[in-house]
Length: 477
Image (tube, rainbow, N blue to C red; front, side, top):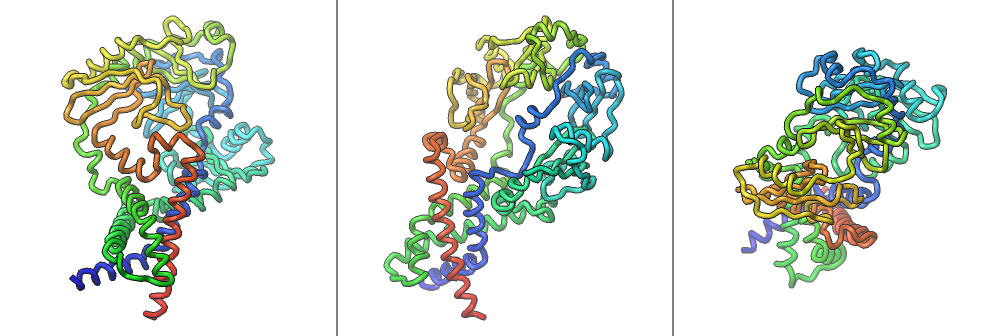
């Protein structure tokens, strides 16, 4: 068996030479990801805070009239907001349509001058503090994740944060905000960690293959390192090889599970999403059917002022809940508020749990309900460190082939479906990659210390491998 051991050593050695530096980058940037998060973006709360109030008194047309004017049929969503200081109905989609609510004019996009005006209002700065850069039509480094909203006007702001804004031409609002600090953090964390380089990430198929192949080879290298660590217990190493062996024994398992979970996040064989038909038609059953715009009356400004206590709102989304029209109002309070349309009133009470369960059952009649439980806290599959996801939440477990679980809040909104495969994926990916185990994830800074220690150990193991590989290459050259 000496030939097999020799083969394993050679494979591990040369894969390590090829990948160790990449592993160092992954581990170090992983630590950065704890605090930097992902790529720069416009935080939804920041967007809402900078939005102008909605002047309901200027809304002259109904949602159905706006849809007819914009030739929108069967809208999935309708949002009422302020665009260029005017109320407007937006019909999101692949090609969003915006109709001004005061005159029923179709919004046709913004040019350079108007985008500067939008950016000026967003930043509460004079136009002289802004500089128009260009119209971004193909993704640059910061718009990779926002390609569906291109083209965008790029604008630089003369402020202390060196802010750059991207105004989406076709919707007339700021879609992306970056600062110098955020861009530096992205280069230290998300960009190297995710291979988010524009020439690579701009080609989805190529990017996916590169990540899958590099992480796949990393799995082979890490696994062989563990095998050799066990089979070479009696071998006495010295110098850098001793350090490599010791750090491999201590941090090798974490290194393997981490690179394996990263590999699985790319769904290389689409196992987690294949054949997942669980859930039936729960969402339509909860809503009562498609959105019916005729059910929403003309906006009555005095009635809105009375119902909301004169408080301004920023954005209103039209929804259908259990067959009735509702408004989903943002900017009124810290969290969105539901307002019943007929009659107009703030909906504070949750729907009866029994009525929600009956609708969930009706939406998935072929699967018996195994368990229905009202959760007052998050479980292992419905959770949020920032505690922004609604609570309490109704969890319904179905006895179907996919082992489907449905999560529904008190306002009859479907918040998520988790099949058996997706629950397994949650542990294989998020559990091993982010260590978001319930006993640890919500205990900061303990979670930070554990993740930093493990990533630091993995980086140390990999850096020792870089030194050994460099020495090996020098001898070969």
